[in-house]
Amino acid sequence: MESYKKAAVGGILLLTVAIVLVWPWKRERSIEHSKALASGTNRNSGPGVPSAAASSSLADTNRTAPLPPLDMPVAAMFDDLQRRAAQGDARASCRLAVELINCNQLESFAQVGYRQNSESAEKSLAESGQLMAANSVAAQRIRQLESMKRCEGISEDQRKLSGNYLFQAATAGIPEAMIRYAEGQSITDGRSMYGLLQDKGFDQWRNNAIGLLEKALEVGEPAAVFVLYTASSDNNSPIGGLIADDPVKAYSYRLLMNKLRGKSDTPATKLSSPQIALAAKSASRMHAEYFNNKILGESDAFTSLLTPTWAFPEGTAPRRPCE
Image 1: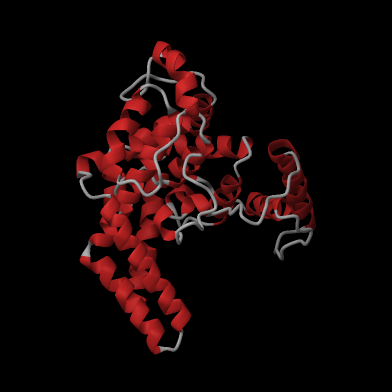
Image 2: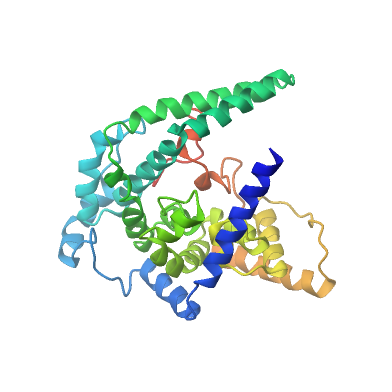
């Protein structure tokens, strides 16, 4: 187990080093460009991106049309969501992307090694007397197997479209899509460094992830605070490999999360008093400017967009995807 953990950590470090080494020099320009995309300006045309005329004529219909039920098979909704996405329905693009991302993740679970690890974890927990934890692992595995049925009939070529639709939704200004895209969910093979670097969407993601993440923060998406906090704290994720570690910024995001929860306590830190004061000032500014000083409800989870939708027991997901 220890050798497996060391290999996994080593793989993550190699991945983040590779991302940093191939990061383009014109970083600031790419950030501003991706923010402009999400603001609806300077948006390039491309596959799945509607013409201005099509977007205008169908805007009202797309805005009000309901998304498919959450339990509908993905194959049954694919054609309709694809048609709506081509007509400029950003919510449809987002929902289709989320469904295809789920199918990609579940395809990984379908591999023998992933299932065996889950079964082994359940058995180990049960043998050590941690029955509630073992039951939780078993319940999640059942949800995974049930969710895999919803992906029946979806081909690998269809699953690979997830990045295109997620980018379309993100640049259309949907905060959830911005978060999912920035976190790297659009990269279809994120299980290995080689797979990530070879993904056709890697360069696009690398050039736009930070700008879209910062844009999500600016429009008041709570998940952006958590992602920026972790990415500024370490390099244990793809987006963490793009964002330089900055203890003061990380602490300001930590303080902002406290403010959004209505907490007044100050987390422990090794920062100096001037650094703490700078971080506190930044957190107060962001809370007022981006969130209008609001306090989130208990159901508003910072990490809900980072958790696969199938991981939530039925009826417990804090938000419906893309709504």
